[in-house]
Length: 130
Image 1 (cartoon, rainbow, N blue to C red):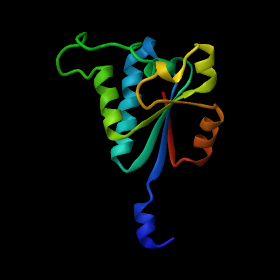
Image 2: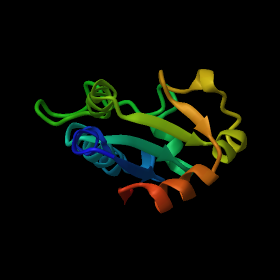
Image 3: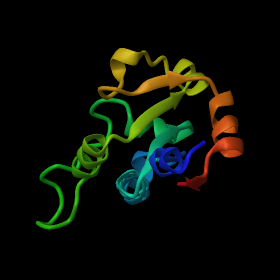
Image 4: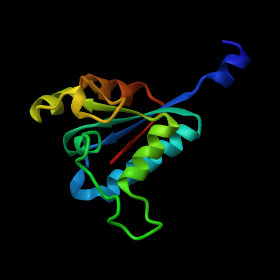
């Protein structure tokens, strides 16, 4: 691999999100750090397990109009992450347990087998857990 190829190669970063509507502050932190990683030159994805599914199911978490001015809402953090190019995946087993289909998810989110999380942990350049 030449020097130019090394400069073009982006690092890969994953955020595992297992927190949902019961702790929206953690969900927003996960989204913020995913967005920061994406803008820092990493191909970033958020892999949602357990309660983390709440973040990718349309309309489950709603904060718009409920927080003081200047405090970022879940909707703002999600929009920032999507705009930055962060990818979202939902654990296939969680989707089955909750009877969720791709149509129930935010635009661009995918349902992916649990082995993917193991691959990310073994092969990605970095991971955070929320």
